[in-house]
Image 1: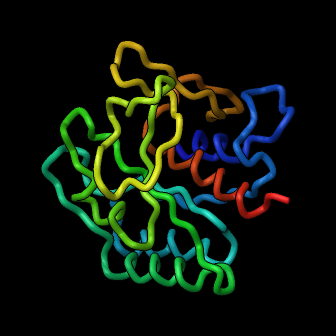
Image 2 (image 1 turned 135 degrees about the vertical axis):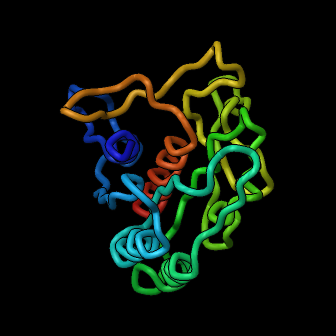
Length: 195
């Protein structure tokens, strides 16, 4: 999952493999988050680790996308988000791009997700090639923007993103709001380094 997101942001130009990332000259870093139990301490470590090095961070975890679970960052993660947004990058602030979630089919609502509704995050959903929301994206008032992502309004017509994959391979099967958040993070990187 992280390899696919990283490729969307920073795959090197003219690589003759999978395509090019949105911000192909960006540096990337990763923190293993979803291999086990996500704890407040682990979230805080992830959010704090990029405070002095990253312009934007794409993040895609939160409560279950089941239409009935509410969740929010723990005390340490909330503090790390605030510190990063206000004081990261030497006082310029970090941009935390958060995926709205893939619970659209279960009527999940990202307004019940304390990560996407945080004043310190930018919540991003996805639309398909017809300009309609992807069937899996969660709709909510906290969504600040959307990116094209390969998802369609109906499952049957779905296109997907091409990006890097494990073992030096490509995939044509990537979709979801984490893909949309990665694209947006790459766009923010371009905005800050545009001549």
